[in-house]
Image 1 (cartoon, rainbow, N blue to C red):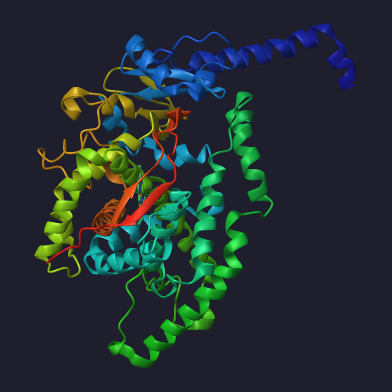
Image 2 (image 1 turned 180 degrees about the vertical axis):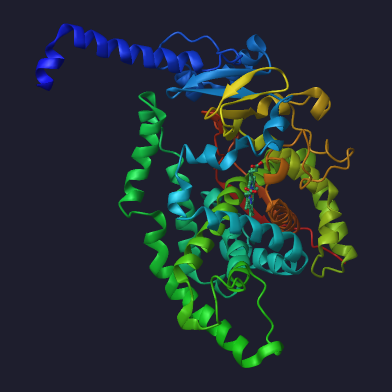
Length: 509
Ligand code: HEM
């Protein structure tokens, strides 16, 4: 019967008419938006993808010049909007409309890796409470651990010592203080160190998978990258066993000591303890009743967020310093020595570290130069569309990227010669590296700005301070920067051999 009906030409025309009417009705109800100009491209489907990957700097600069502050590009099968210095803060401040986590999810489904959104929320809260509240206490441990790690991975260099793959050595050095902050007892446990680093790199590598399927539809890429996770594979599963075998005895001992000593028990100051203090994880202080699954995912989330960015950016200031050795090394050494003398070579306090103003400004300038050309993808999550203050409108679901180079190259925001590395440009504005400002975007901005930034900056400063006092570092390679400056929008990491030698001049009190 149905076949007969469908075979009838009148019925067929009626069905096609209905479908067309439905499509027309839907389209006519869609509000016509005043979208940002879509930059011209020659090849359909490919759009701007090729130039975005091979010469992003030129593509962004030329599009900015031609179309103004806000424009769109067609990359990997979807339109992305790029906003410049005027609109960047509108995106960062408006977290009800522009969501960075959702933006990241389009690339890697972090919510499936860490299982629950709640873990991410709690993690952010714990970082916000823990880092500023405890940094004063942690700074002593950070110094001891960086010093130990330097001894371990660089050591005494009576004779010049070549460090091959310094990026790896620097990651190893930074992993030690970070692990110590997460689980105090485990910082020198090799299995745990390897687990923490392995986990960070496994998740970070997922971001490197090019979203080729997005050429057909972005949804397909998201499904493709989620398939292994939906079928039970998870980068965390690989490390779970080692993790639990080491963390479980630590948790059991803490709970046992707490019960035994009562008020006399001094709780360790670390991230694990912040989770153990949560009644959801440890409802009755019973070691047999710990929500280990939750603890593992929560700690893994902390590891990934704190390690991935710190390890990514930690080596850059050292390379910048070596590249500009003639100009800055001696001056920064003198500042380090002066502060060291004032403290009688005792451990530094946070106040002492904040007195390293030249080093701080140097680190800030180095990080300013480490930002990608465009980045921090935010997804527009408003119900139907959003209208920017400049009048342009973007539909819900649109990815909005920030044009960092527009902010970085602006003379009004950065001062004279913004494209040149000028280490002390931030001193006169009394603007330390941890301060969130319109001209410094590496830590984002608004309500979701990085809550771990004071930890990261202090670690980098302590690391450089100790290097300056102990070593003379050089490279025998003439051009340390790779020929190609950017890979897509990201700066190509520098990783040339470094030669360390003990500093000949003895530090005198
Ligand atoms: C040089 C090192 C670091 C860089 C460049 C960095 C950068 C960033 C950026 C750009 C964001 C997004 C900000 C936004 O949405 O506006 C962010 C968020 C975050 N960072 Fe960092 N970060 C670093 C180190 C750390 C460390 C060491 C921790 C933890 C101890 C940490 C914890 C977090 C958390 C929890 C968030 C999410 C905040 C939220 O969603 O409200 N970061 N970070």
